[in-house]
Image (cartoon, rainbow, N blue to C red; front, side):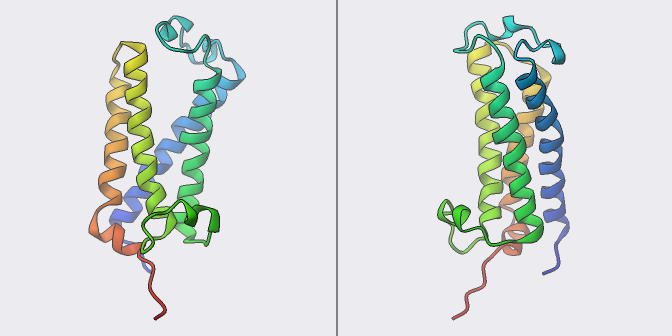
Length: 153
């Protein structure tokens, strides 16, 4: 099936998320003090964390590696039985549903940061909008149609 411009735009948004989350998460795992990213530990005051290891692991896996899996599914439309089990939208390919999950996850991640950190930065707004944009583009009729599962009946 030929992809439309909206589908390519969704893939670009997810690529941007991957490019920003993988190195940042990895740096926080390697150096949980946050020094390699220029992020002071004092940012975590008021949060349940004493260092950036757990946030780094979440950032790397859930917002870095998970989107790689989603992007792979969007490009290859591969069969992935484990992902299908987590897909309540049985008429849609699992990667479409997981794109939606990714957008929700990103918005929730940013909101949790705002809750714990009690501070705001322009990056919070940008990544919140990225999450919202992923959700909106995922639900565009042209994208949704692109990932419909055709019945064999």
